[in-house]
Every structure is written in C-alpha cells, then in structure tokens.
Picture 1 (cartoon, rainbow, N blue to C red):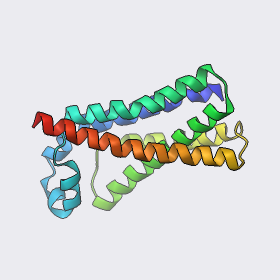
Picture 2: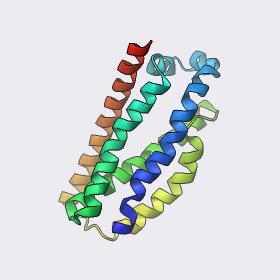
Picture 3: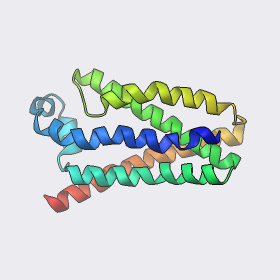
Length: 167
C-alpha cells in the first residue's frame, strides 16, 4: 500500500497545474461559453489566477496531509481515508471530462484528467486489496468523499473572496 500513497498528491498537483495555468486564458478567450452557459458566468465571475492558485493550495492540504500521515504511520484508518480521497480525485477527473463533453470544447483540466483517470483507477484497484471493506471502512470512505466535496465548495468560496479583493 505504501508504494501508492504519495501518488495521490503527485496526481493532484499534475492535474491542477493545468487548471491554474489554463483557466485565465480559457475565460479571457471563450466569451461565447458565458453566453451559452450563464451558470458558468456566475460561478467564475470573480475568477483570478491568483485566487485559483489559492484554492488549489487549500485543496492540496488534505490530499498531502492524509497521504503523508498514511505514508509514515501505517494505519488502516489512514489508508481508508486516503482511499476515499483518491476515489474523490478520480470522480473529479470524470467531472472534468464530462464538463468538456457537455460544452463541446476543451477546458483546462481535460488533458490531465484523461491522462490521470486510468492511472488513478489502476491505483484504486491495486490499493483496494489492502483495505478490508466493511461497514466502518465504507463509512470512512464516504466521510472522506463528503469532506472533499465540502472542501471543494470552501475552495471555490475562497477563490471568489480572494478574487473580489483583487478586483
């Protein structure tokens, strides 16, 4: 299990660098998307590259923190939480691929989502042999997924607050 643990923050960083680098360009050069999908306009109206970088940094903390703890302190609870975070990241990749298909256009995060999703699925399959799936582990996995959903919402809030301060 230990051989897979540090791949989680590496996959996250690899993927989110594409988002940070590309989102500023994307929103400056795709005004027709805002006309077609007004919900995107609302979601990203205060977007700044610096705000996006701050949100990514905030999201990175639990991925790196749990991975580091699980790496140094071999523990079934930490492994299970890590597994839930990795599952969340795989779902994140699927969402980005779906977003790109839905708007019928490249979005920054698509390329690394396509690259990272198969790798993440393989790691999930290989690491699942080290987890005993029972009610408590399933609840821990669900808890870590719900935590990451809440954390993503917090990261977006942080991105908008930071963007408004700069704007």
